[in-house]
Amino acid sequence: MAVFVALGAHLGSSTSSYAASQGCGGASWYALGSRTASGEKMNAATLTAAHRNLAFGTKIHVINKRNGKSVVVRVNDRGPFIRGRVLDLSKAAAREIGMVSSGTANVCYNVIG
Image (cartoon, rainbow, N blue to C red; front, side, top):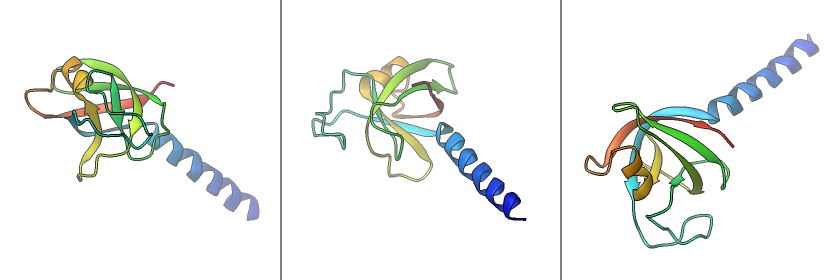
C-alpha cells in the first residue's frame, strides 16, 4: 500500500508540473515604463511576458487562437492578475500575434526553454 501512495504522490507532482508548462486562456498587453518583478525595466519593444509562476527567463511559444499567429517570448514579470487571463504580453509581442488593436486575445502557450 505504501508503494501505491508514494507512486500516486509522484504522479500527481509530475502532472502538475506538466500542466504549468502549457496552458490556454486570455492574454492582454501592456507597455508601462516601470520595473518588472524580475528587476528589469519594462521595455514595450522587446518580446517579453508576465506569467504568474513560470521562472524568469523561461521562453514560451504563444499562439493567438483566432488567427494562428505566434511569437516566442521570455518571461520577465508576474501577472496577469485578472481572472481568466494567463499572460500579459509586451506591446511588441502583442503586435506579432495581431492583438494590439483588440487589447486582448485567446491564446495557448507552451514552454520551449
